[in-house]
Amino acid sequence: MLENPHPQQIIWAGTALPNPHVPAQSNFGVCVEGNRIVAAGSHQELTDRYPDTPQKGGDHLLLMPALVNSHDHGRAIGTGSFGIADDLLEIWLLQLGAQPTLDPYLAAAFDGLQLLKSGVGTVSHSHNPRNWQTLETEADQTIQGYRDVGIRVAFHPPIVDQNPIAYDPEVFHRHLPANLRSLIEPTDASSVLSTKDYFCLCRNLYNRFHDDQQHTVQIHVSPAGGQWCSDPLLLEAVDFAQQHQTRVQMHLLETCYQQQYAYRRWGKSFVQHLDEIGVLGPWLTCAHMVWVDEADLARLAERGVGVAHNPSSNLRLRSGIAPIAVMNQAGINLGIGLDGHGLDDDQDYLREMRLAWTLGNQPRASSPNLEAQTIWQMGTVGGRRITLGEDIPLGCLAKNEMADLVLVDWAAIQGMWPLSAPDGLLRRATRQHVKHVMVNGDWVIWDGQSSQVNEGEIIDRLQEQLRQQNIAELEGQAKDNRSLAHYLRSFYAEWDNH
Ligand SMILES: [Zn+2]
Figure 1 (cartoon, helix red, strand yellow):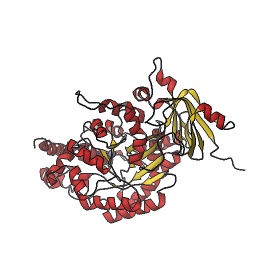
Figure 2: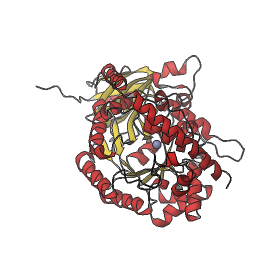
Figure 3: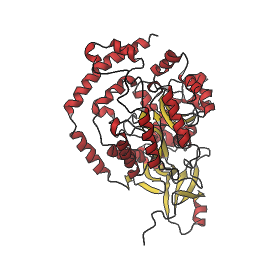
């Protein structure tokens, strides 16, 4: 007889954070059966109620829901390793063409594993295509990579249909010397998929992968960013999401030039324009939102739009600091994402929450206070809401929730001087403190190691791929990109004066 892969078990800890609306609990646990939590409460009550059920946990541990990374790209290797220096987003994006091509399966498996090892159970993956013509194969392999390591994924393929290089392409093209003009067609985004092919791809992926029972995979649509997508494309994405009961994720207002683009184009803010054409609604999550106008916050809250906050990436790509304390005060649904560009290049979601908390509290007595509890909510229930959806039972340790949970070494985090949770967790914890991670009822990380795949083998295969890259070709591409970058910088410098 086959062994039941999901025997009933009690998981408990000396300290627990069952949900962001109650204080930390002592000696708290859950009883898990299959992929669900069937009971939650004091360790003693659970032991009395289920006397024969095996137990895992300990006094020195802290039990918490698995975290939700609301915006990422599954890069696997930080772009600095390929000689691509951090810069203004617009310049940095131009350099990405000189990245080596990594196998999508290996990249997703490695990245998913790093996230699990930092306590993340769900990732929102905004895909960066290696080759637009084989995007469906890349999508298959990426989703498979995440699933093989055991992380939930909200996968969204991107689409752009305008302004691929600069936000005012004709003017930028005129800025270029003749020898560089031939390198690019800045107004032409047709090398990517046609809109028709894109939605056909989304439909195929949705039919094949979207899991509305256990929510291990969701397929979303992603017009890549406001300035890169025409109004008809944005509206078709919203239609698709509504027809399929799924979501739209896009980058928005990441840089000051994106904010300016909207005023130059329509004489109004991006948010106002998108609202007028009908894009804003509870189906939409916008990543970044650093340059959102304060006057638009109430409108975003009213429409139920989600915002994925990416503090590290916003600093590294010189975008700025998103005003999350006032967004929270306005009632906007918030989550946190690493954007594959954490300060330490190590996909440490616990540190990212620390950065979000610290940066979120701004100077001036009149600034709203951002409490640890709010950041904790963004990393769990709030992140789930804007990533998987409003009605998905995930993000709390409570009866009938899906069993996604994490045990961290609370004694090590506390050290000599105690701090209460969640403040102590957000102030001191790093990925090194994560011990065991359960996703959908499976212990996918045990004692800090994957129970699903051989991580060493994945790393060896990635390193082998890097060794096989055509370095001369990549360096040639990087040189062309640097020449273009010089003109792109002077193009946007002129925007600074207007
Ligand atoms: Zn992003």
